[in-house]
Length: 408
Image 1 (tube, helix red, strand yellow):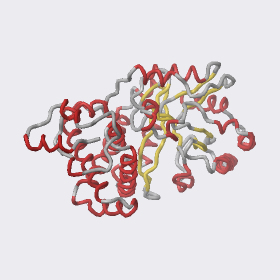
Image 2 (image 1 turned 180 degrees about the horizontal axis):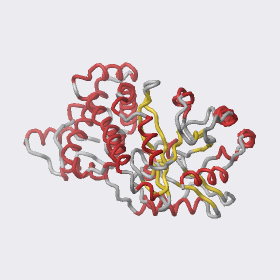
Image 3 (image 1 turned 90 degrees about the vertical axis):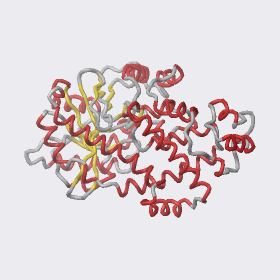
Image 4 (image 1 turned 180 degrees about the vertical axis):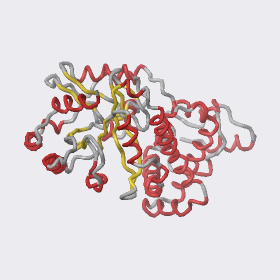
């Protein structure tokens, strides 16, 4: 519980409180602060704030976090073929991820495992590299995404592509600053009011979120030069509020997170895609390097199925895009029956695993994201979907053979 008389004493002394004094404001043996008194919240940065920020943006794993990664959620001893063409290592070291994959599939004999970090080219095994890029489709005025895969030697000549990815990563990261501004900057009052209406947030909650956002904004700008790029994304704000669970009532943090999500939804909707490179520009550069192109979760932007882009295939299933798997397999199968001189379109599946989610505290995890596992795409073995895959003459092994041949 926050002791208001101690806050008053500090204000009367008009001194910057020490770390010990700030920690004394919270009686860890009693319940967290409830109800909230926003008048007791100070914008002044403290040693405790700095320490919390450093904890927030560290990319060093503790022994406990490493143990969480090394222990797979489920083991598949019968699966001998593993494909993973859509997953995000984030800040988790590749050697630890490799041990997890080997533990998940102890008897695997064949594999094609390529990481697809957002707008950053990475390699898993020294043979292939990959990246998931954001780009702009002017035909239907939407942001779309591509999975790009390369045989490693071809990436050595990819200076232009790397520059395109860096620009895209920096622009995508700017959503963090627009999200914070939408909460605390007067020029975005309309966004704030829209989020208040959507969530029925009261004044105390809004002021609490604004207070926390101002804190993070100051902390980021004071530590920008040492903040890892992996953490410069709009998710940082939600992670910062999750860190407050040790000092504030969990229900209050849950309400704050709901309000932040409402603002983020508005920011994403109004975030201009025109500063991204066009889809055709990424396709042209990838093809010039001999890379492969897969369109992930196409059900999220249906017109892309009609764009007739020069791609290698479609991802017909992943944990957040699985409602129309059967239909998408049929679409690809029918297109392959009328190739008209084009290469066969491949059918792929992606686990869309975000490894950074697995090292977060259980009460701060996105349960749906945390449940995703690299290489675990159960739809390949679903009896109903197998019927469609058989008609398409494909499975994991055939996908590996056909895609490797193109990449090499």
